[in-house]
Amino acid sequence: MRFWELPGPAGHVNAAVDALISEGCVLIESGGDPKGFATVFAAAYERRDIGTLTIVDLADVLGLPPAEALMRRLLPRETRVAVATARTLCQSVELEGEAVVLHGAGGHWQSWDIFMRAFARDRLRTGSVAPLRVAVLMDELPARPGGDYPVLTAAPLLGRIDTALYVAQAMRGRGRGAFDLALIEALIIELTGWNLPLADALVRLPEHTLFAPFDWLREQQAAAVPMREWDGAPFRCSVAAATANDRRTIARRVWKGQLHTVFPWLEEVRLQVVDAYANPLLRNLPLQTPYGTTITVPEDLEFGAITHLLRNQLDRPVRAMLERMAEVRNCLAHREPVDGTKLKAVQSEFETWRSGTAAGRSPGSQWRAKGGR
Image 1 (tube, one colour):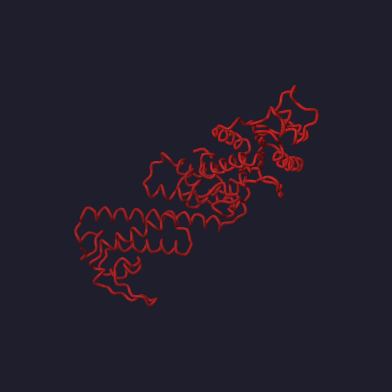
Image 2 (cartoon, rainbow, N blue to C red):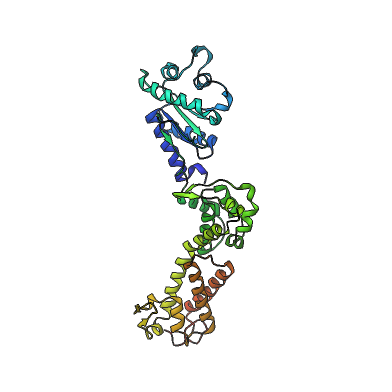
């Protein structure tokens, strides 16, 4: 999936096209890719079937006043006027129905701001049927953009859904089980944020590195980029965080990735264990907790309570499995990432227990409770 096909960027392009069509003059933040944005913007504009749009790289006309630069790029020599102004461009019969998207204004923004203000005002006064439309793209918006024309910021360009779709596409073809795939994708999403090129690199890493990515991220310090908004809040690039020795931020992101996948998986495991040992658990209920509540149904029992109630009935492997699951859940509940080796061991133990339960092994098996159903 290409960047501009993601919902956030595609929505930004369409909003920019709408603004240009309705207002005729607009300043647009390009999300850090002016040339790429210009191309998709032109395609989206022309799909509306309201006219043609020309892409102009202002680097080709640096040093010229904005109106003169536009006239030279848009009009053949024989139709140019002696003095180009915002008004003459608005009134040009040759430019009726035309639109232009500009990039490369960067260091000369002050003169373009003056032009844009004049163009926005003069366009309203012209008698032209369909005066020229002008969109200017900026890598990042200037500190004080003008107030006479609409300004579209790219701050909400990428959200979690965009990163999730991008990572899922990049992970396609990796032969993993559903849980492992979901966990790896969640880890990459949390570490990536808005920095999609980082996702391309993370996808290629071995799983053990994704569980402890700090050292690898710090080695990529040449690729560190500034903080930007993602998912409605400022998000510091993981490479920049690691370069600044911010271990806490990286650990928190690994924890969040695990939280999204491991926690729901643990709850499903807990309920399967409760179902398998429902009869002996029921015989030990109701249970008064240290917190003053009373548990009357097995489904409300946590791993620790299950292990305690069945302490004289479980074989050692099953008890060890439940104790490790309690440790994993406790880590996640206290905002601590789980060691990858420990998580793999718990998964393996559960799969062994589940396969034994599904095969209907006798109550004497190490994978069934003594006296269980």
